[in-house]
Image 1 (cartoon, rainbow, N blue to C red):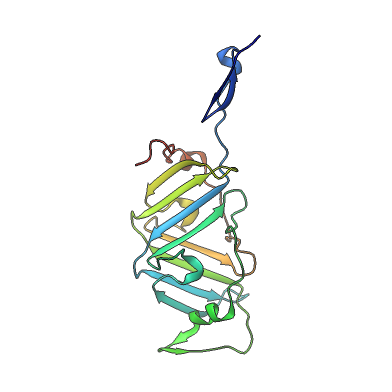
Image 2: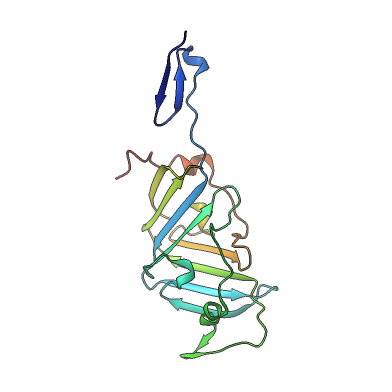
Length: 188
């Protein structure tokens, strides 16, 4: 009778030939992104034609941080490119992008389609990969991953659909990018 061994990283193994029991890599489900952009955040509201209808710079607005407004921080579903737990921002949060010379400008018709966000993080970008059971499977720190920027890896830059939280033009991290993640037990 074959013996069964349970391991933390590969699940169960039995006494089968080495060829037959290849370790399965955990499938990434969620990418937690955290970029320190202290005062170097810029965001724009874009209408259906892609025209800027409001902007904001300075600290990160509360819809894109998890407490500390020096960090651009949220979770992304790796397969779909949607921000996990996204809710359409309240009108007051969107109106904060429409400030002009210290005064709040409230539009009559809300026609915001996308939010463009940009933050200079240089090498202060952190990412954690989670599997479907919310276990950490890899960690990365360095410059912004290519799935989170539009060309310059010093910046996090993306357009987000205001209704769905979908990152416009999302490209899943490729094998080379995933190889940059350290297994959780080796990350410092």
